Length: 101
Image (tube, rainbow, N blue to C red):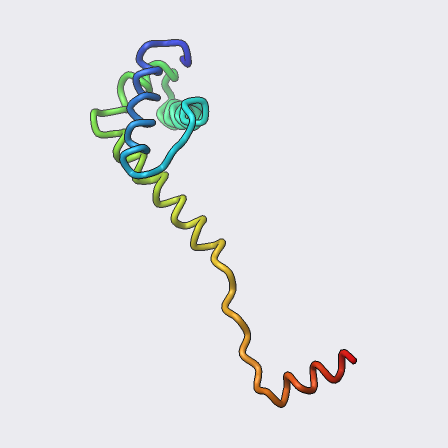
């Protein structure tokens, strides 16, 4: 599958769609992600990977998939946001500092 011209074209399309959204990914990473997606589609549909690649990736699939990747990236960034700082009254802070001494 990875050596076919169709697969290389799909990788190129998805890489370009990601670039348009400001996301960069190596062609190897895109190929791996795409191969997993094709395998999953083939298993769910009960067809071969080659049939899935030919039949279930329409013209606008790259933009849709790039949108999904962008949404996943945004979710990861939101989950990495630092926790808000704790606000302590001065009296509690003074006790905390005194207790450390």
